[in-house]
Amino acid sequence: MFDPKGSNLLDEQLAVSGLEMHWIPAAIAGVTAIAGGIMGSNQASKNNANLRANAKAQQKHNEEVADTINEYNERRDKADQANYEAMYEYNYDTAIKKWEHGKKLTDFAYAQQLRQFEKSNEIAGLQFGLNKQAAEQAFEGQMTSVEDMFLQNQYQAESSLTALKSVYTEQNFNRKEQDTKLLGIRSTQNLRTASITNQIDSLMTAGSLQKQASLVEGLLAEGKSSLGQAGKSRIKRKQSSAAALQRGMIGLEAELTGKRKQAGIELAQLNAETSLAITGVGLNLERINNAIESAEGEAEYNGRIMSANMKSFINQTERNIDNIITQKQYADMNTQAQMMLEPEFVGYDPKPEPPPERIFIESMKAIPGFTPSPSQQSTLAPLIEGIGGAASSMASIDFGGGGGNYGSGPSGNNFASTNSYNSVSNPSFLFGN
Image (cartoon, rainbow, N blue to C red; front, side, top):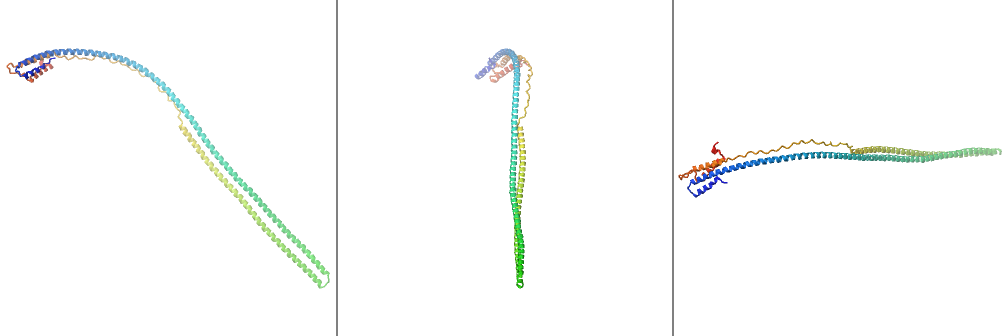
């Protein structure tokens, strides 16, 4: 495309060449300005045609785009509705299936809890039974211990009683022995007393008889003496007989007195021996009584000890039984605490309900976008500008050779081009407001 400003190259060449022909550049500039105006006008006409063609093509394109969008929106609305209905049915059917499956899972979980609860009760029942069995065994053990202790006390009591009976028997034998010994002592005393008494009586009888015999013999002797011759010899014989009788009587009396004393001494000795023997028997009997009392005291003491031991053992057994009861209660409480609570059926989840229907709104119809009318370029403005430029160039020719205002420098050319630009870009430059 021809550029009117291309004259600057010619101006520069003319300025470089140093030619002084000032009218030739001006003429050339004028022709160039007119040619540029004509070309500018043609170019503006072509530009306007292109703009109108582009606007028409843009409008057609907008209509095609709007039709495509409407067709797409219609198919999309149908697809969305079909997809929604299919998904609606699918989601509802899936929710119903999940709900049914959830019911089965709930029933299974509840059945499992019931089985666990029954198993827990079964184990707890067995544990309660074991606790009871252990407590009963402990009770039996305590009762057996009490029975063993009672039997032991009975054996000890029997042993003590047997020992006491043995002491009774032995001491009774000893007492009978002492009684027999006492009876023997008394019998011996009586026999010896009777013997001594008999001896004394015999002595007294013998003495009496001997006295009588001596008297008789004396009388006989005196009688014989009297029968003899009288006189002194007779008297002497009588005195001699009397003296002999007297001496016999005195001797016999002395002999009897000695024997009586001896018998008395023997009797006293017998009484003393008998008293000592009786005293010994009494001491033995006292020892026997003391042995019996000691055995009875020991048996009583042993009985008190056994009673105290039995009472203490029974008290300990009662405490043990209380402890066993407490332990059983504690074990039962632990077992009760470990038992499961009876499960409760919580029910099923609510049955799914169909969700609310979706309200479909058809997509808004697309309309072709507004295509504004293109801004038309003025075809006259370049011509007017070219004519104005040519007139200016012609007016600047200095036919006297003085050069004029145009000059050969770049400033004049720039002025012309600036005026041309202003006239094209702003037509009011020529035609006013």
